[in-house]
Amino acid sequence: MHKFKNEIIAAIIFLPSLISLAIGEEYWPFTSFPMYSKPYQRFEWPSVLVRDGSESEWQPMIEEDCYGRLGYVRFHFSALRFGSGHADTSRPQALLDLTQSLAQEIRHVCPDRGWRTMKVILLRHDVRDHSKASPVFVRDLTSEVSIAP
Amino acid sequence: MRLNTSLDTSAIGLLRLTRMSVYTALLFSFFFFFQGDFASWLQLMPLSAWSPVGVTSFMHPLVLLLKAPATAWIGHLISFLFLASTLACVVGWQWRISSLTTLILSLVTFGLKNSFGHAFRSESILILAQFILVLAPFASGKSVASSFLPDSKWTLQLLRFLWISMFFLGALNKLRFSGWAWASENFLQDYLLANQITRAGTLADRPLATFAQTLISAPVVTLGLSYFVLLFELLYPLILFKRLKVPILVGTVFFQLATFTLLGVNFLFYLPLLPIWLTEKEAQ
Figure 1 (cartoon, chains in turn cyan, green):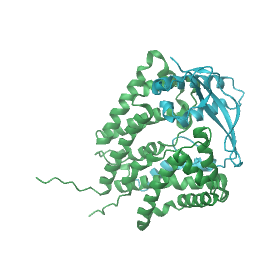
Figure 2 (tube, one colour):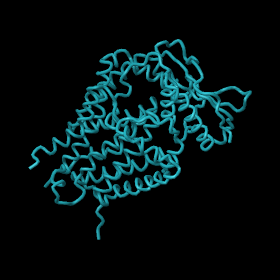
Figure 3 (tube, chains in turn purple, orange):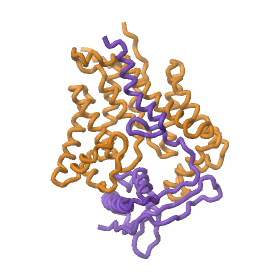
Figure 4 (cartoon, chains in turn purple, cyan):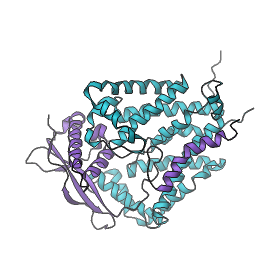
């Protein structure tokens, strides 16, 4: 009875990964391996800027801890997705909503920094051009959002 | 009375150890990602940012239910049930029901987390391991369903295949999407540069960034590392040879630590599965 049960179970468990490999699409949680499989050439990346008051300089928010439960990488993935140039008009609003959630989390996690406002911008960098160490500003992705309570 | 402190290295003993380690890591990851409170994390996430991935595609009604003020308590119930069932899994109490509950709630909680921001790689091995562990022969029972389940040895082998597949399929994907150019064109140098820039907005003067810059400015080093990474993943099945097991495992720990520190990708949730590689005692 059930002569091939072990093989059947193995096939059920590993088949989604093999199908995913064949079609080249990720399907959570069965595939996690396509990461870093494709080349970077020129890439765009959202950056969170904060400032102490309306007259002060914008500075990048480097502290990853201040992203709290939203997570640094996760927030940037979302910001890139919602900030990229699609026709869907709900996407800028989604990014603004998410940025307001981040402002709420910053108030909770990093209240001592004294930041008053924040915004998300889009940067561009050509990784094959090694003469440029800094990315180029492309555009604002959100308007200014208040951090202060 | 003598206390037996020796490690049970039979197949079922190693499975028990793996079970405790995996579900403890799952508890840790729940606190790491949600600070132990799935409901309030969910309230933080705007509904407009919901974007389902993989198996979560059909969960939209659940998200609406969890975000509605009148039914937000269900989120707290999910948190409580997840913590209770995962704790039950750690100790092996009511195995079938607790492991199934944890698997389903893991798909819900971590699935929704990923659907509010596509970065879904770090804990997926803990979810995949559950698909195998849920079949493990921890519970007694003589039902037809129980007789179909794999034995301890085969369950342990499945977990080993899962571990190997994470690396081996990683290499196959690199070859599928980029071919050998992945190594020969020094993609690793670009990944390092891109990651260091995006972390700080510029090549800032931080200890790890400084080390990464040293690597970036030496293309021959990153080229060598690129070939090493691709070959390491491609030849990962060699871990099944007894003599190569320990060196490859030590290499794996360094590999994951380097990925975490230099590329910012957290694959350290693989490590709770390490007990599967302990040498198994032959049955008498």
